[in-house]
Length: 200
Image 1 (cartoon, one colour):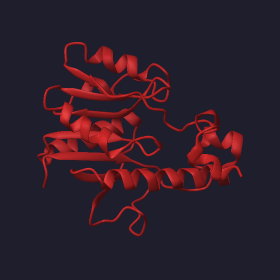
Image 2: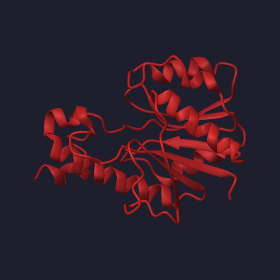
Image 3: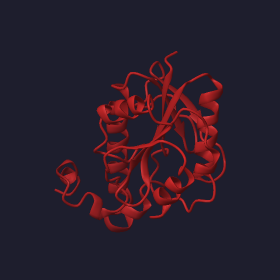
Image 4: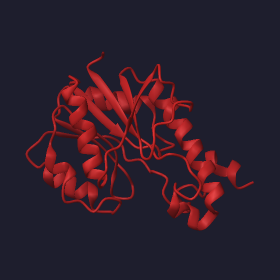
């Protein structure tokens, strides 16, 4: 076991259940294809990071998918809002003995292995590391111990999440990674070269 662990939150790729805001513009089928594309990219990025890797599924654990069970541990997200789910995943990881834990979602095309490695490196000298997202949330959260307040009293999926999270960490040494754009709505991908294949 390495001392670092990356947690990846995913949704089971089912028609009509993923990227619903994006689907309002491009339809459920294209939204599903784009989410599968993002899942594959996330898996490729995570695979290059030197840490243990854990996938947390939203609905059910899928054995025969892109996430190779020899590389990725597989768990189910617990019931509750996003904060409850993330807190449980962090707690479980620290209880297993990991010293640095970082969580990412699965809807970031621009995430690289280097950014995740930078997050683990930053935890050498900082208590928390955050990757800010352009929509006011965050795409990565890393810590060396559980700070419970970070997961409580948030309107998840809104533009205030990052600001409120930083307020919870006022007395902690926080490292901010570069800002990235996660894929939620059509405007996020409209002119992105990697997604033009879906609109040709």
